[in-house]
Length: 455
Image 1 (tube, rainbow, N blue to C red):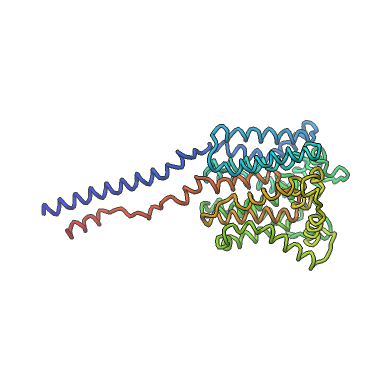
Image 2: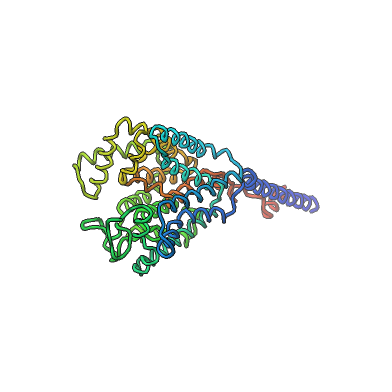
């Protein structure tokens, strides 16, 4: 009996020591990312993210009830926000994964100087777009999944609540924000039109436009005050669902899915509804697609656009044939001067052709840099990253085909690139590579007893 007791006691003690060593190793491995790549406080990330989404709504309230504003006020607000955001990576220190966004930013700084020189005027539109992408990518690289999840839930809740307020009390919504007056004063949009509701000019649509017919109210805009951004925000939320579905609780999934569905139906959006179907299928398909295949996506989309334009024939209507046909036609009319950036001041003349806008505003060099950045910035190590990379690329390159610079609006670009930055951060990589609890099975007391009995 004594030998058996001795063996049992020794085996049990050894099991405790082995279990403790495994536990210590596991905790040490999980602590490494914190030591190498400190996370920002959640309040910092959420504050900058919400500021990017809400600043237009705040300015609209000021314009409607305090004092008339102009484009200068919007530009100053964006400049202050981006300048404050630039201090974040400087205060925390630059890191290895900052190389890619910093390289893109440096190339666009040089590009802005060159374009300003050859155009004999200040050309800053492309630099501003790149700054948003770069800074929010770097911010996303410094936040963990919990912080990003909390930001997305708060942002969606605010947008969802405002959208329901708009649906239920459209006159009160219009009186609070006065979207038509705000965009007329700050963008010059709708100066020659008048609508008694005070909504953004496109809210009422037109005869023959696509409509689900489920809501009698005008097309919703929510906190964004215009329809395109709400539709694009629903698409960005769909990309987040693609990339983070497994990490969401059931209430969070319900909130985000309900928002996407009601936003698409009340906004009567065609492009975002199509993208939602692509994202739904992409949850299964995207992880099976080849790595780096995102590089070929814009070429494939443009080739398909050319084929569809030839098949459907010319159209001047606001439909698929008209939108795609216009993009193909405008891109085909680009001359050498425009390709090299000599006509950058004409970039705003392409409100419905994103490829022409990017080409003219940043030259062919800037267009190629942006193309590679969008296609390759998210790694392809895990299924979640593959879903995010393909979803981001599909949204970005499809949007350029049917719209102008809408994908560069800060209220849309901020959450999109915040997500992209997180998906390439050490915090995400540590989460998917950390050993699971079932990976190592410590010796239990029963196993120890059995081992003692056998001995």
